[in-house]
Length: 209
Ligand code: C2R
Image (cartoon, rainbow, N blue to C red; front, side, top):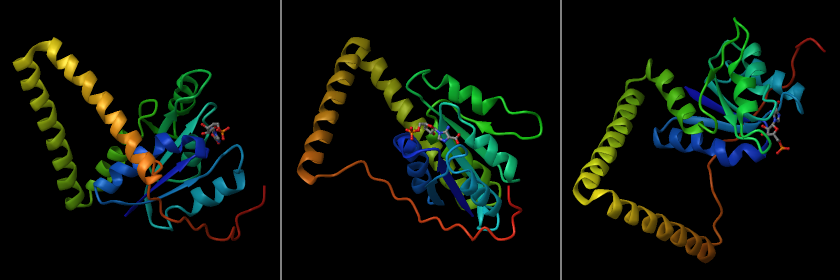
């Protein structure tokens, strides 16, 4: 069982990598690539129509602006499609959200929040967990960790009060930023992600358009 993560442009990658990261954490295989309904319509057809035969179970599709990609993918496959509205420069991602969420009856796209790629990954994992107990257990661990983190924060806030808590929060985030910058400077490291290669089959006998 494999998840596909696709996006309309490489400019969406900084957001869509969150889906890849959580799938890695949950040890779920994925492929990650760029497909655009607007700019690469032939590739969109080939990709969507071949997805099930290539072993894909769920497709996460992110796009910004006039975001037709998730809906078009959903129209070309019977696999579940999760749409991620990517925040656009001009309209703050509301345009992407509306484009993805307002699908006509019959062609659903399960839409997450603007820039909600992490939740898209978790939702895809939940779908796979119906058939895979190991994934269900790992999801349960993830939720347990979240619960533990929030409980610890609550206890700390109750203990030290809001002023000291906010002071610590501010200083921790400044230190974290500084550490990240100096590590990148030292190693020449960039934001990294591990995508798998995607191979499309030849166009086969799909009727011409
Ligand atoms: P560029 O940064 O490449 O100009 O793209 C992309 O998802 C991206 O957020 C700007 C934005 O255009 C979006 N895009 C779509 C589609 N293809 C690209 N919404 C599509 O087919 O829906």
